[in-house]
Image (cartoon, rainbow, N blue to C red):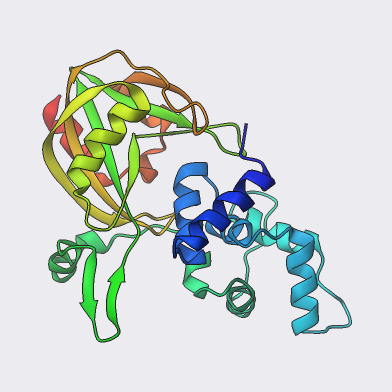
Length: 262
């Protein structure tokens, strides 16, 4: 089952005390709970849809006030039954949530295809800027292969579960490759080793920086060692991978690496 509102509020308070921004919390939850960025941003603030509507109406009084249903429509989009938020809507929600309007959008990112961007995407995630050091939320993803199978975990979310590769948040200063291996073991009980770094991208839905690693299975039987976050763990035939994760949601270099290893 999905995390309760109380548990999320407690998690948000803990992360805020640790110095996390609302945007970083929302991105982390989008990875862990499979929710879109508009939902995670609201939850990061501990708000209900009705409370967001009330804040909107206080800031922008209108003869036809916003209700929880309006917020729900914007959060459901682009799924059936949802309504696309306009740029003005996103800007107003961003003010309420103290974030960027872009933080509220999911979508595909193909920056890795731009040769001029590759040098930027290959630099460390901690970059020096005129305003100081900026830490970008990064997740290490392990594509663990054994013969013609790949290891997947089913994350708990409001839809009942979503299949993903094992992954873990990379704390500042940590080695993403080491995190990928350690998180795979912690979540699934499987030991693996890095074979290749497949690249980086801003995730099209969560907008966090993802580091992808092709890994070789060493030993261990898949076991759900994190039942709070995951429903189950299993090996999946590579030929059936897109039945678990839509092809358009998989980082293209991952598909290419699996095809070359077959």
